[in-house]
Each structure stands twice: as C-alpha cells, then as structure tokens.
Length: 262
Image (cartoon, rainbow, N blue to C red; front, top):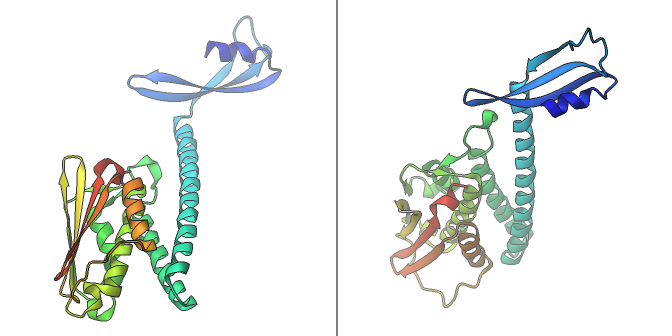
C-alpha cells in the first residue's frame, strides 16, 4: 500500500488505487482516490477518500471465474460432440438413424449439464446421483411399453460437472445397448440401477432381467464399447465389468469418488 501511494505522487491529476486489508478474519478490498503530484495539498496534508469495494471485487472475480468455466465447458462439449458425431456416423446405416441416435446422446449430455450448471454467489455446484440417473434414464421410461420398468436405488451423494458428463456418456451407451439387444428391447424386461459407496470408490451395478437370452460376445470391439471403457478409465479413474448371465447382463461400474465429484 505504501508503494502504491508513493507511485501516485508521480501521477498528474486524479488517481485511483485498489488494495487489500485484513479486517479481523476477513479480507476487504479498498479503493483509494485522490489527486496525484501533490495537487491541492495543504501543508503536508493530502486529501482523498477510501471506499470499501469488496462487493464489486467479488462480483468481478465471480464473473471472471464463470467466464473461464463456461469457455472450458464449451470447448469440452464441442470435443465431445465431434467425437459422438464420428462414432454415430460409423455405427448407423441411414441419415435418419444417425440423426435420432446423435440427438438422443446430445440430449443426455444436456440434461446432465442442466443439473450441474454454475450458480451465482460461488455456491457449490453439483447434482445428486439419484437425480442424475433418473433424468438420464427418463427418455427410456417414456417409450410406451417401457414405462415404469426402470428402477433406481442409490445413496445420497453429489456428482460434479465433469463426473456428470462422463457418467451420462456411460449410462447412455448402456441404455442404448439395452434398447437394441437387452432387457429394454422386450416388453417384459426390467432394469435396476443400484449404487453403493465403499471407502473412496463408488460402485454402480446395472442389472437387466426379463429380456431375450443373453449371448456373450466374443469381444467388445464396437465404438460404443470403446467409448464406454475409455470414459470409465480416463475420466472416472475406474473400470467396467460385464457378467453375461443368460437371464440378463449385469454391468458393474467402479469409479473414483473424488473424480465423480469433480
């Protein structure tokens, strides 16, 4: 502060400097305004004003943080959209199929981001895992015969923006496969999604029952399977396991609790 005031003596005309002070246990921003170059000085007394601008500074910092966060989010979404477009174009046969599947995938991401969008005031961002799963799977429960056949049972825990995006990708791939080949392709099929928290790990179990007989694939080489494994390992620091039971596939997703909360 002394250095700032010393510098103002070389300024001709009005000056304004901002600095911080400690008031008790809080940091306050102060704006000092006066005349430089000893203008209008009387004796050795310098006249000016001090304003508490803590609220303005906090708003400016929040605005910069939000702008940076939104820029980062947009870049991530564009990268994801580009990847999804490439994958969908290779896994569909007609333009109509591609448009429908790509729209559904992007909508799933949009619903996840609605739950974890930044809020004013620097409050903690996040969504509850149960709310996230229910919203992501809702489209498959609205498809006529599928109504009421999806059950979600998870403990109360928070999911951050990055975790929600990754989990949305994974769940959409599983749901898409279920609609095409699994329990949700049969009117009598059911889907149960449960989760437990174990130490620093969250385990989500995806259980399908009542669908067509399951035949274990020789290898998981499709684009959707690669996307699922890559998302689980690189973004959630976890793993995915398949149990190809004849009654219905069981998928176990293990993920780092801290990564899920990001």
